Amino acid sequence: MARWQPDAHGRLCAAALELFEERGYEETTVAAIAERAGLTKRTFFRYFGDKREVLFAGSEEFQATFVDAVAGAPQSVSPLEAIGAGLAAVAERLEGRREFAPRRQAILATNPELAERERAKMASLAAGAAAALRERGVGDPAAGLAAEAGIAVLHVAFAEWIAGGAEGDLGGLMRDALAELRALAA
Amino acid sequence: MARWQPDAHGRLCAAALELFEERGYEETTVAAIAERAGLTKRTFFRYFGDKREVLFAGSEEFQATFVDAVAGAPQSVSPLEAIGAGLAAVAERLEGRREFAPRRQAILATNPELAERERAKMASLAAGAAAALRERGVGDPAAGLAAEAGIAVLHVAFAEWIAGGAEGDLGGLMRDALAELRALAA
Image (cartoon, rainbow over all chains, first blue to last red; front, side, top):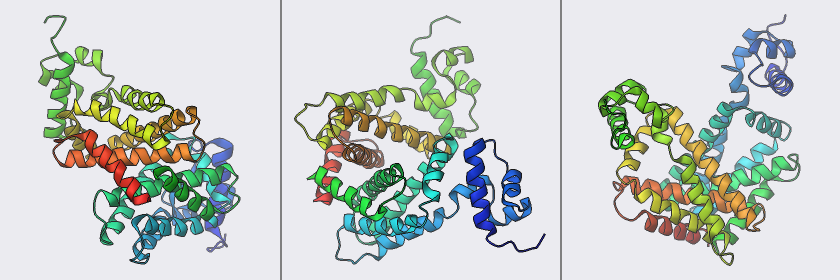
């Protein structure tokens, strides 16, 4: 077997999703994922620490995308507009995972531990965004509230996107949900 | 030993909190909790399924308090006002746990599994409130957004209350945080 496998990462992701869907997450082994991908376990562990990482790889980059966009929004904009810039940035990122995102979400829903990990990720995202707002000079409790409200918008818009088969424009759904939040609060 | 122990439930709670604080949650056994309370393990298991239940007992009633208040708000009020009624109801409930609540929160922060359980509780609270709003005729995504924004308000106000040693009026902090959210969205 050649040392270098073209798109090993993508093949492992695809194989893992297929097996999680066919057999269930818990019943799927790393050996089976590697086999389905036509690769070795050793190759799997070059990319992922364990099978859970197939679903959570890139979480840090996802958070960095959100937080950097909040931090980098023009100083003149309101806290909720800065959060809106973060939402736009992650929407763009997720648009590139149209095929992966809904399947991933369906798998998370089958396993309490995965669902918990996802909630922890969202809590960390809210904390990161709140910290970015504080650095912009936003006080408390406004920073925490704007950040958590932003995660509510992300959550609701993402659920709509998934429910629609991840078609349509996630960025647009985020903007609509943010506008809806403003209307609710008016 | 007498079959009936006066305030066994309260004594077990107090003993568990003391030990979680002194030794850490993980290092505390049910046997040690019962011993500290001057009761038997058998008595402990009459009240709690395990040591974690000491921290999470009453979660269902807490959610019922919130959801019933949302459902029971006058039909004329807005979705966010109905959520406000839920927040007022749980604030009143938590005021009665002034001594317990901040100590419990500090223990949750020491243990990832407990923190995850608490996040799951909050997610369930948001889902319950959203369902109550839908029954009031609120559509989507408004119902989900108002419910999740309400949990953001609860979370932020509760953190402020805890940070202040759980003194002052939690209901007032909830109202202030809801007003702050409205101001942010304006």
